[in-house]
Image 1 (tube, rainbow, N blue to C red):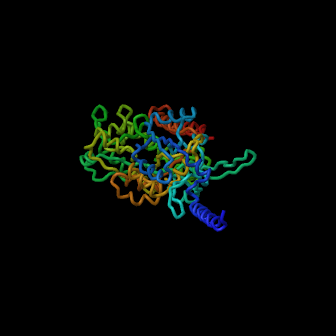
Image 2 (cartoon, rainbow, N blue to C red; image 1 turned 45 degrees about the vertical axis):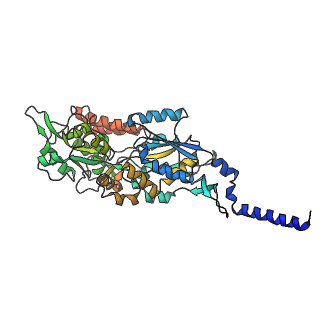
Image 3 (cartoon, rainbow, N blue to C red; image 1 turned 135 degrees about the horizontal axis):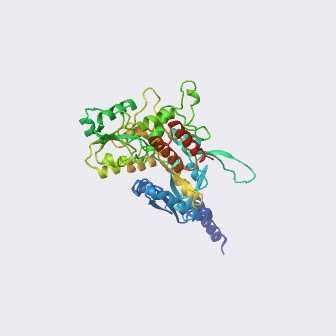
Length: 471
């Protein structure tokens, strides 16, 4: 072969190699090719329909078109049984919702958020000829400091846990990690029937519990036989008051009760250290008495009993003026009573005491048995961003967990009241059996109403029962 021709061919071949080198991502690495294989993320929820997440699913698939999402919503009453059975039989979801009181129970079934994720991204090559290719990218997840700063304080108590993250069985490495990602935080508020308040000559709903008790007296109607003809609110009992334990718990907290110590052990049967010498009995006693008086025929505030329908049913039917509920109750009420002349106000407080509200919400976690850990956490990490979270909240009509998004929600007629309470919302249970905790509090209420136990014994028994669920 002519040396000149050989030299020209060599230069041409070298030029091609150079171009391929400049756009080397057009031929993805073996790791990138493996990471880009088709994957399905099964997501289980219990609060919202797929409409709330369809946009963020679509957004995520722009950079990760190999990922398919399958979202399944369950009814609340069936969800946990279905979830536990599926996880036990290795057919569970990759990502699923956990209630904020369930963290302790599910610690063995979920993985903490990793420091970083490694996933395949669909990108344009960097060479002269732009082509779609796959690139393996390592991305940091939200830092612990950012997590604490971005989300409402209640999230830290519920979702952050100190765990051993060492992969070496001979060493320990304890770190504080998020166990999941919240998008919204619901809070307990007061729905009210404006027609009933107007008829009673009450211009505004109560701002504090003293006003609430006064309005209850004005609205309640009792006949000569002592039977309730008109009730003011579903409150005072356990079995027929929706979220009765939440109402009672926040009354105890507002009254100054410390529900648990730093390790999570309940201590609502004790006088808090800050009130030692000030109170003769735990604040929980007074709160429980105040609550159950609404179901006591011998009290001026009597307005409810166990023969009444469920509290939300009574409110929907226009039979009672007030209903203690969450943002998630709104759709149910409107669907059942579209013409009900109702409004929503903030939860009553104890005048002179710090403002305290109650949080009740769900967050997403990653199943320990998921085969797509990096993809699942990479997607959940995207939900910590304001833009993604806002899309979900707008579709779901939920108050935000991210503090920066709350300001825009305050003037929203539907979620504004609930959003205004997020920063002062609290929770307390960190045990392994939230169902048993709620049952103990419910039994405590019933014990007082039926006279089975006096208040001090009922509180002590409930406290000791819940203590058995703490590890």
